[in-house]
Amino acid sequence: MPYVNIQITDEGVTREQKEALIQRTTLMLVEVLNKDPATTFVVIDEVSTDNWGVAGELVSDLRKRQAEKRTSKK
Image 1 (cartoon, rainbow, N blue to C red):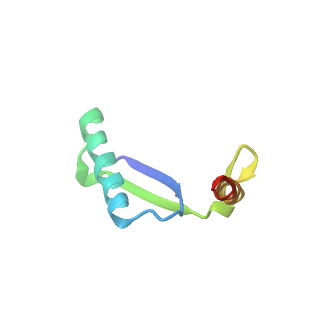
Image 2 (cartoon, rainbow, N blue to C red):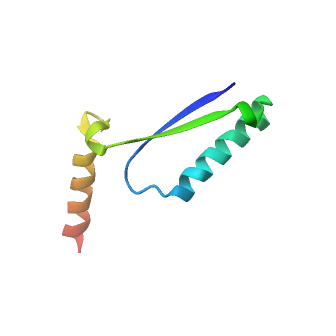
Image 3 (cartoon, rainbow, N blue to C red):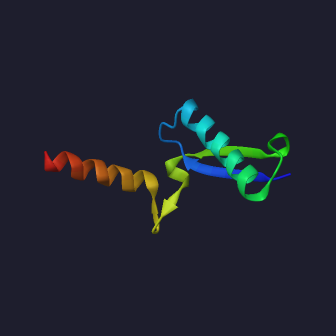
């Protein structure tokens, strides 16, 4: 009974993209480990960018800085 938890930031991931993640993750476990898809669980947690950090910074601050850089280049 595999359980896979996928954590992503809450930045506009569509329902279709989530379906693809669930389908492909399940397929991978079937192909690689010969697991029964009926007993394979995939959970997607969407985490606020204020609650996710990279390199010691909040992702929300990184995204803001990236947006400012793009704006200043125009």
